[in-house]
Length: 244
Image (cartoon, rainbow, N blue to C red; front, side, top):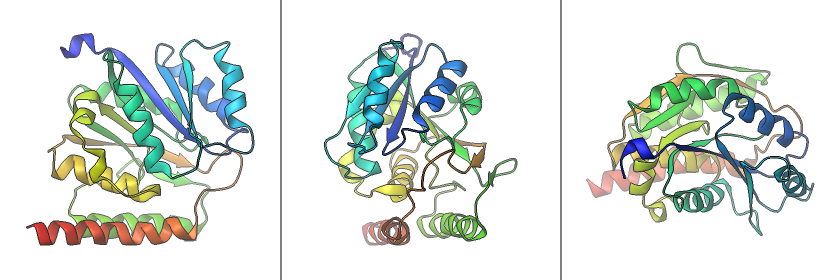
């Protein structure tokens, strides 16, 4: 199928306890990309996020919900969603973003302006013009140093390896063997980018964004996520080293 026929855009929103943010982010996406489809992937949120989305589908024909019975991690949520989205052969572009308001819909058109020349667009905090607002100093240092550590260790020239605000061409996703990507949390985002660049030779462009602290609710950051973020680049490096 030619690129001209692949016109549909799908925005994937993974959620867990985002009842206070989900309506605003959906409305924000629709205001910027009224023709795009939105797929919310909810991991059995106890706060009723899925119920809110179900109610919204009565008013929005371009909104759908994928309910997962268990919270098994961000990586699994994305894998399930991407598999479902790719079943629709008319989908040409997939966008992933957080549902908590930290990824602002105003950048979506910037991504689409560049995607025709690249395979993957990364909304980046750590290039000129990008940044983070309303984070405590320790979180800024943790994220910045963590990305630098990962970039040096795995050798991929992407400044924001843990970014989840992505715009991806269908052709790239069709080549990805998700069985080879085992990480969860932010580590999944690192491993996904590494795989796309190192194994598939993906053409990547980072577009600057200002990342803001979530609008409502508590951060999903945990000790497990931090530890995994430390281990994942080391595992990738060792796998690469011994393979070479």
